[in-house]
Image 1: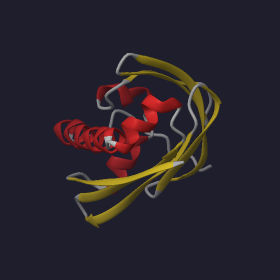
Image 2: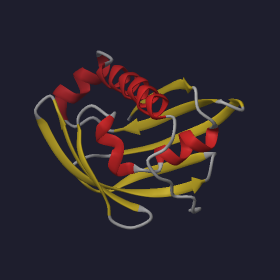
Image 3: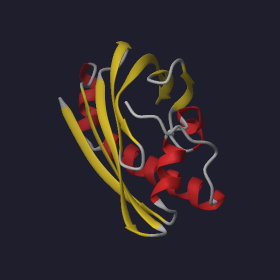
Length: 149
């Protein structure tokens, strides 16, 4: 199993950062390699990804969701095995630290090699930087889901 942990500080209040993160169908706007996410239920999403020409589809279940604090997930079906947690920590009234932790099982030698070369870490770092640009350029979230899981 492989692991990555990265963070970014965004210049929006914790509520805004959290609310935007709950809009899974907007992830392709800032996550490289994510073609589409369909929100099937309050806790089930279907992902279509294409990373370096490798297309995958899988379902992810939200296992924990606490407004303005955390969102945790794990894959439950499909071509990827991963689990993760995103936390939202207020630094001050207008700045939030977003921390992403993810565990996954590389599939085959190519993915294992890419992992060892730091590809996934760079991907996550880039996605968080693009999230920062996305939410800061808007200043407001595209929507919100405030339920608890």
